[in-house]
Amino acid sequence: MPGLYPVTFGEVELLRDLDRQDGWVLSKDGVPQSYIDLQDPTFLEFEYVRLMADVIDLLSEGPLSCVHVGGGACTIPRYVSATRAGSRHIVIEPDGLLVNLVREQLDLRSVPRLKVIVAGGREGTAKVWDETADLVVLDAFTGATMPVELATAEYMGDIARILRPDGTLLINLADGKGLAFARRLLATVTSTFGHVALLAEPGIMRGRRFGNLIVAASRAELPVELLTRKAAGGLTQARCVHGEALTHFIAGAAPIRDGDAVIAPVPPPAVFG
Image (cartoon, rainbow, N blue to C red; front, side, top):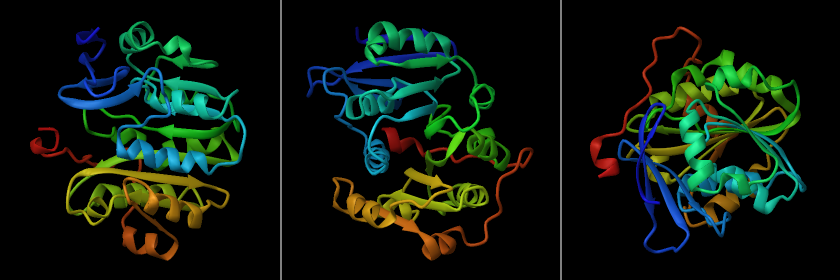
């Protein structure tokens, strides 16, 4: 049912999509966190989620073993299960009441082979066995801000531990003018993974407006040429930056380490109306 619901860390709102009979938005503090269509999990409303799906679609065929840091309404687990039958999911989400709400109101039980660890991102990741994940999706936010403790070199090392040698990491981050946080996060990721690509709409990539950027990283080669064409030809018409162009983007920024005084960017009020 639409309405406001108390959760462990405040309150969330469920909103029905008036344009799609089975579409739902999960929102917190006025910030949309997830969109799902209960009858069609392959319908992806948010542009940054479509970019993540572009990367996932280019991974090797067959089911995937996935770890999702940040749950929300579990849009990506639903998408992967619908497009790759037999996939397995571990979802790490600190808000237990939110998990219960999504189970009861948004049919999370319909997603096969999904296990939830109710814990913070670092605590939950520490419980995952070495080299068991084909895909790690890091999409954790407090409101509209990525927790800095999930952007450090130490945490990237733990993600590398649970990924298989050819596994892929996807990160959703948000940044605005100047992209200072994005540059430091990319410096952090490239210090751990040898192959990295950055995807975003051109206006966001240039730092002209606040928005979401997607990082894809692996110790194995990424299909960057295919990804460049796919991103440019999609509804978002996004850019894919990699190689020398990514080095120029990072522009000598320092990796983030535990204890560094880094403030993740907060969107201006106008972003969400």
